[in-house]
Each structure stands twice: as C-alpha cells, then as structure tokens.
Length: 580
Image 1: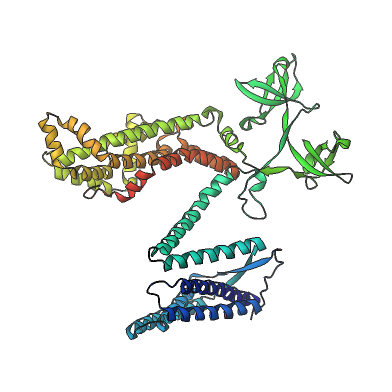
Image 2 (image 1 turned 30 degrees about the horizontal axis):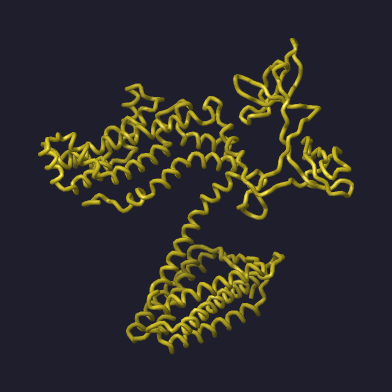
C-alpha cells in the first residue's frame, strides 16, 4: 500500500476517533444531567459504541505509519489533514458511497421495519450510483492525487482546544438537561454556524483591508498570507553629498535632488517626491530651495563581530546598502557596505497608512488626487437617486390611484419593457444622445432616471395600492389636490420602499462602469468606477496600492450599508405584492 493511501487512512481514523470521543463525552454528560424523557439505556449503548469506535480509530491512527513525505514543522502535536485532487466522477462516487454508508447505518439503528426498508432502499440506490460513478472514473483514467499535510499545534494551543471542546460539550449537556433550557443548545449551534459563515464570507474583505496596510515585502511571503501587517522603522537623514531640497514646481510642492548647474545660476532638479512625478526635471533658483531630510530605513546586523543598529544612507547597485551605524556608541557614525541579506529591517506591528496617499498620487495630476472622479460620481449619485425617486413615485401613484383611459394597457406596456435586454436598446439610445450632443457628458447617465423605471414603478404601485383608501378620501374632504395628497399623505406611507429604492439606485450609480465607458470619452468626466479600472491597468501588480485604492472607492458604500442596513434587510423581505 502506498504511503499516500496509508496517510489518508490514518488521517480518516484520527478524525473519526476524536469525533467519536467528543460524542462519547457529550453522551456521558447527558447521563450525568439526566435530561427529561431521555432513554438511559439507549444513551448508555450510544456511549459504549462511541467509546469503542473512538478507541479503535485512535489506535489505528496511532499505529499506522504516517509518512508526510517531507520534514515536519517542529511542534508538540501534529494534526493530520489530507485532500484528494481528483475529477468530478471520483467526487460524485465518493459522495454516493458515503451516503450509502450513512443510510445503511440509519437502517441498522431504525426502530421500525418500514423505516429499515426505506433506509436500505436509499442505501442501495446510493450504492448503485457510487458504483456507476466510480466505474466512469476508472474508464476516464484520470489520476487521483492524495495531498498530505499537517497542522502544527503547540502544547498550549492543543490544551486550549481540548478545554474549549469539553466546555462546549458540558454547556450543551447542561442546556439539554434543563427543562427551561430546551432548545438552547440548538440555538447555540445555529448561531455558531452563522458566525462561522460570517467569518468565512468575511475573509476576502479582511484580506483586502489588511493588504491595503501592508508593505511590499509582506505581499509575497514564503509562509503564506501575512494577516498582521508590519511597518519598517524609518528615521530622517540629511545626506551631505547629495542633499534633498523642498521646492515648488508648477504650484506643486515637490522634493528633488540637484542634477547639474545651468548657465545663469539656476539648477536642474530631478523630482523624487511625489510618486506620480518621480524622475521629472525642472529648473529652480537655488535661493528658493530648502534642504529637507530624507526618510531612510533602520536595519540591524553585525559589524566586526558586534551586533549593530544603523540606517541605510544609500542604496547601491547590485542590492548592496551603505549603512551608517547608530549603536553601539563605540562605533557610532561608522559607515560600511553590507549585503542586503546580511542586514534585517527593524519592523514592528503597525499599519502602513502611507499606501493610501501613495495610491492617490499615482493618478493623473489633472484629477487632483481623485477629487475630479469623486465629484463626477457624486453628481451622478445625487441626480440618479433624486430622479429615480421623484419620477417612479409620481408614475406609480398615477397608476395606483388615478383613473384614465388606457391605464391597464399602458401599465402592461411599461412592464413589458422589462423583458427587453439592455443590448437591444443600447444602440438606439446612443444615437439619440449623440443627436442631442450629449456624448462625452454626464447627461446620458442621469437624465434617463427622471423618466421612471418599470421595476421601481411596479414596486411602488403595489405599496400605494396597499394604503387604505380612507386616508385619501379624508384628504379630498379636506380639500387636498392630487399633488398635495400625493406629497403629504401618500409619500410618508411608503418611506421604507423609497429608502430601499434609493439604496439600490445609489449602489448602481456608484458602481456604474459600463455607462461611462460608452458615453464618456474624456478622463476628467469619468467616475470612480472608471478610476478603479484605470488604476488596475496601471498599478494592478502592486497589490497593496490596489487594495488601498479599492478600499477608498468602496468606503462610501460600506458606510451606507452600516447606517442603512435595516433598509437593506427590508429590501430583501419587502416584495410589494400586497403590502409592507
């Protein structure tokens, strides 16, 4: 038998043994608490069976040779894991076999003959399906690879996990044994499952946020994803040989270094900061320049057998660094050339906030660090939300309360427009806007919202129809016109639906990328969605900057979600079919 298969069998036995052991502990706790209505004899049999399975499985897992195939990570305990890299037929066959075994076990534990027959029939069907799928897997000749791994656990972590499991089992046993606490254990398990689901689905967002605060060296770590960002310590340094100057170029503050002197007494300067202008040159009067320090990294290493701490004063060709020693005092100020592998950067746990301004500095200068994109997006969002709410509520009120010839036909025509794909109306709409001279403007993106959308009209119409007619009749008796009745009586009754539509419209306008790509040509008229795509094309390889820019782009939507999550939930529960 191959080492991979032995490792897989040992892993399965180990997991089965520990699960059975935990079940035995739970049943023992149930016996101690003696839940009302519990079958003591059945619980004892289950306890004995679980203890027997745990003993056999753990003995098998402990005696089988568990060859990892590579050196183990030093740790007190190693928890084996295994994964099968195989095709769809093999997975379906394995799933069918597992289901067949489960049904067979249920048939063995069944209380009635009819239940036994039903479980055996299901086991037979699942077994037949497993044979078919495994046969297809054999015919496909697709290899099955067994990947072996281990989770290293320190003694403290292992003891903490065991105590946590025992505490949870004891709590579940106490909850199941108390009459007043019936169902608490199920509620605890349900909420734990929901929390685990939240954690799983929140991992991508957590990775985005953590990456936005990382430095370059943490993006491709050999130990996997770095979840705790670290920042390198930096100190100011005045280079006497090549000083750095603060200057103004095109009304912009820059830091530059002198390249050469020009006729007439001026200097030719090379910009070093900000990042979007690095390498550019300009002429400057030496009298207008001010010497400023350069922030350099702090490193540790060895010099003449002594541990030293210094700062990197110059980056040399080939990766070498010129280091000026800061401590110990007896060699302070000494400079030496060190290989990049011989010195380590001094780093501490922290957030690298510099990624956020650096990401904005890579945008074109005419965008004013993204403020132009933000302005365009806010214009689109404001007019889109205002136009959608105004037009859809008026049209929905007319279809729900007013009587006029052809109302039913017109409403059916309105709903039928929902069946048209967007690609069908794209070209005619573009030709209309071109004829109006609106190409390369924001008008095509927000003006159509003032002409109502079929789905929003349908939703609001259903809400209007659910409002009692007595309210409208009372308003008419008081002398209110249709418009005043609509504004002062009807609209306040549908605020939840309006809030939901406003949120949907806001998110759609904020994330709209295809519309600006079709109708807008000038970069200065593009919204934030275009800026994200532009940044990805230029700096997509720099993950920390890309994630910082994406975080800033999604921040308003995230804030909206936290402050309006009640309406998000209502947007899921409210259908508009007959009421709120």
